[in-house]
Length: 324
Image 1: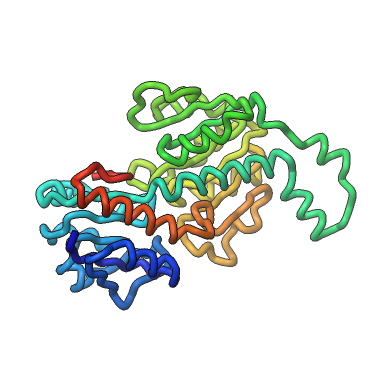
Image 2: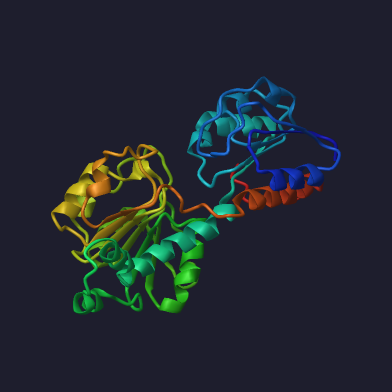
């Protein structure tokens, strides 16, 4: 397969060598402003005009102007910038295929969420705080506060690839799983699937509310003061989706007022989260800096996904993680 591949992913040496080896006779074109952060939007690049395939984060407006572009492989699971009526119409007209990287990020994000669920249940952050601070021996309170996941109710709000994998990881703990999506179809195995419009009815019963919603006009500030007020007082809330889906002021106010137990947040409305942001010091709010999807072989897995789809593209087979 002879083609021109444009990529604005700044790959480490080993994945880059694997990419160059795997593309065979295709030519690789890389702009000078390539970035290692796949959350940074790229501007238009004149070199993209000559490409048959794009790998990374090409400018969505430029994609619409390039009928030659056969396939775009995004390096994110989320694709809000690309999910517009204009781009969907253009790629349909031009015959351009768009794929995301759900299969790269579903596993690390699911493991990250499970790790935080278990660590909060077993009071591990609290023991770490004690080790760094008073060096006490809170034997009785920590034992009394520690919980098992078994039998608890978990709401998966936004039931896509990450939620499906998290449901698999939670299966041994015998939790009660409810998945919420905009357009529910049939239940998926042990997971009951419900319309997201019914979420408020389930919130008071939930032990864990896991926000995996994508960013969109409909999900902006989705978890607000009214929803936090419906939470069980012992509930735990997690956001491994997008920061725009949280009303951060309402979240902090609910935690300070003891409306529910604890929150774990990985994605924020403003990133990096400013050092003086109120969430850093909000009681019972635990933070990681948008690392849920990160893993040591992240770039290797992006390259392997791209190369597998490149083979499929050459054989006119269905591509993995196709979204348009």
